[in-house]
Length: 434
Image 1 (tube, rainbow, N blue to C red):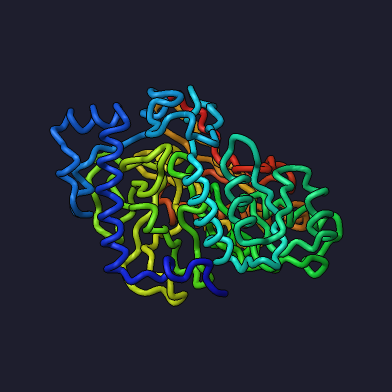
Image 2: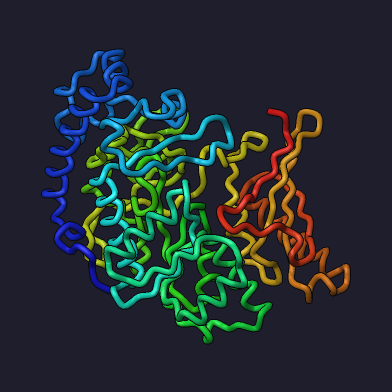
C-alpha cells in the first residue's frame, strides 16, 4: 500500500517540528486577534501571543473544553465571518446545547486531504468502491469519509447507517471493496450476513476503516475473521475537524496523528498537567491549520498515550497515538477503581462460546457500588446443561476480576438479547444517583 501524499506523510521529523512551530505561532496570534474568548482567556493569565515561540511553550496556553463551545453557542468561537463558513455540523445535543462546528472552504479541503491519507492507509485507490455506512447529516462521520473518497477518485456508495439487510445486498451486488462504519456495526453486519447465508467469500471486501468508538483488539480479530478484511482504526473528533485526525497504517503499530495539521499532547485528566510520552492520560489537541474554528489545547476526554518516537515500518514519520482505551466520561469508578468497557471486552474475546455483545450495569446498594456484566452466549452453550453454564459464568467472572481487581457479577443471556446499534454502541447502564 502506498501513500496519498508521500512528501507530507514522510516529512523528516526536524522539518515537521519546524513547520509545527511556525503554524502554532500563527494560530495563537490569529485566535488572540479574532476570537474574544481566547483573547480574554490569554489576558486572564497574563499571556501574550509572542510568549509562544516553540512547542515547549504549548503548556503555557489555556485549555478549551466542550463547555466552552456550549457557553459560546452557536458561533462565539468562530475566527472568521459567517459569510466564509460554508459548512456547519453539530453534536447531537443529548446533554444540553449541542456543540456547533464550522468549516471554511480551506477547512473542507484539509478534511478531504487527511481523509484521503486515511483511506489510502486502508488500501483505497481510484479503483475502490467505498461503502460509507457512517451517518450523514449533522454528524461529521459520513461526509468526512465522503470528501476523502472523492478526492482519491474512488466510487463512493453513500449508503449511511441502518437498513442492515439492504447494506449487505448493496455490499454484495455493488462489489464494495472498502467498508467504513463503527466497529460495533461492522460486527452486526457480519452477524446478519451469517443469518442470511451470505459468506465473506460472496463479497469483494478488502479493507475497513472503523472508528467513532473505542474497540478492542479482540473485536478487530472478530471483524477481520468474519468479513475477511484488514480492519484499521480511525480517530477523529468533531470539535477538532471530524474523522481523519489520526489513523492506523497497515503496520498496526499505532495511529498516525497528522502533525502538519494537529498538535497532540497527553495530560493528567484530574490535574491537567502534561504527562511524558508513553503515559496514559487525556488526549489534548491543538489545531494548526483550522480557519473557521481553531481549537487551542482542546480536551478531547479520550484516554490514550503518545507512543515513543521512532520510524514506523510503513515509512510515515508523523507522531503516533495508541488505540483509545475509552473516554473520561465513559470511565466508571467502582469502589475506587477505574473501569473501562474495553477492559471487559478484551476478556470476553479471549473466552470461547461467548458472543461479542455485552452490557455493563452499575448499581449502588447502600454505600457500595456493584458491577454486573451481561454476556451473550452461543445458542449451543445456552441450550446446554446448567452445570456447563455455571462453569462458563464462573470463568468469565474470575477473569474479569483478575483484570479489574474488584468483584463483579456475571449474567449469561441468550443470543440477540442485547440491543444492536447502527452507530456508537451503548455499553453502560449506570443506575447510581451520583
